[in-house]
Image (tube, rainbow, N blue to C red; front, top):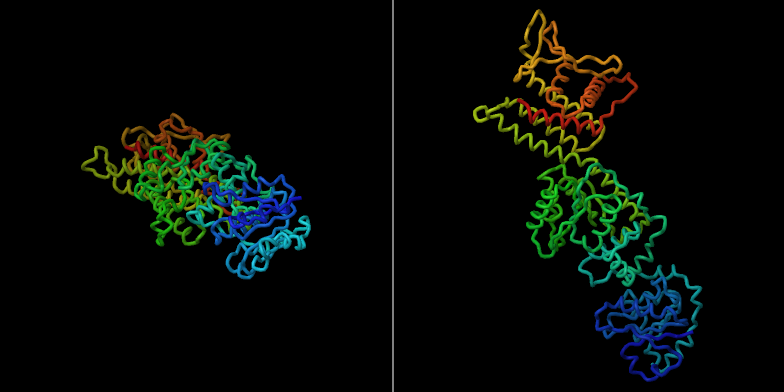
Length: 574
């Protein structure tokens, strides 16, 4: 079995070390510093994996920079690289400092406090007697090494060669997500390799392992949606691995239209970023946006949250159409940030995992499952985008018609204001939450709008009296109202007849008024069976009381159909 000695430049100059048969000499190449120290150490150790090792002796530093304590770093790599055959092998650290001094200078020196690690103070031993010193140490059997005792004494700090903690958290989150959903790609593989090489990430992998029980199969990543919704992903870190992860979940598994905002985040201005986002949303008719919170370098410097790019983009999106669903995908977990985003109209949140979150072994799995639930929620609400578009179209058509002097087909101001007010109120209720009570409230509001339409299109106040009975007609075309007969075999269902409606009284029955109005504005665009079901459900709700055992549930489908009917009627009202 070999006793490995890692050389630095000083040891290379000592003849006894270079001619010793006791040590097998080894060094970490500098490669012209093309590769970072962690990668060079990792590759060197993997090259020794086929060697039977008895002990490993390492100077405090293996590079020219003594204060890097790269030898201590190498020792930690040995302990934290799980596939090394000599992971538990005794390690001898040698240096000229007092052990207590060394522990004060670097947290990496805490490895001296762990099992199977020994320190040889070269101020007490000459270089030519180090071999004897190693031989005299009582090296314990590596197989008895207690790894937990090593972890109890050691903490590896984040690397300083990253731009900021944002980048560290991002790579860690991508790695955890990719492993949990079994995603693979060139960018993801690069991150996995970096995490396998980097000492800090090795440490995180060791203390926060991903167990088989937290793996999510593809069938658990299925998202519920209808139609062909389009998704836009906005993130300055998208190309580092997130694009591939979302492409796998949204595209490969769910066959959803998914694309990223292609822009140079490091060189663009905030104004151009917002403008580019809105142009993309309008051109592609985007239904859902996945939006990072901090997108530009300046976002990490500002103290005023209202100046952060993600919040400004969210507000801009909601300004053009509040129904466009926006999910915030960010590492921020600060309450004031989340509150500001919620107030601005964020429809959901997905938390990017930071290393500190990983102390909960199920955090990654829960985050991904939350993403699926959030997507389901947003797609359930995505109909609101069309509702807001419909409302804007109504405003464009109806508001000019309030001007009796300029419009060729004017409408009473009171009528236009009333229907637009109730339409906006219904949207505010739906935007708040799709609870059953909200759906029911909007359902009844829509019937109030239909009743307003009825009062506008039917000459209710001035019925025509013929042969002792009253008949009613539409204002413009003077077409008589028809009689709708109850279906004897289907309670609450009405069928249109060819008979004109007549009544001995001047009053117009509600059901006749509503059915004739719906038939009038329908213009054969909707199945009358479906319209009948809506009216029947409305009547059941109105007449429902505490003695009845059944509960009438209004569905999103009911509300969507009513919205279409109302918009069709209002756009064609005369």
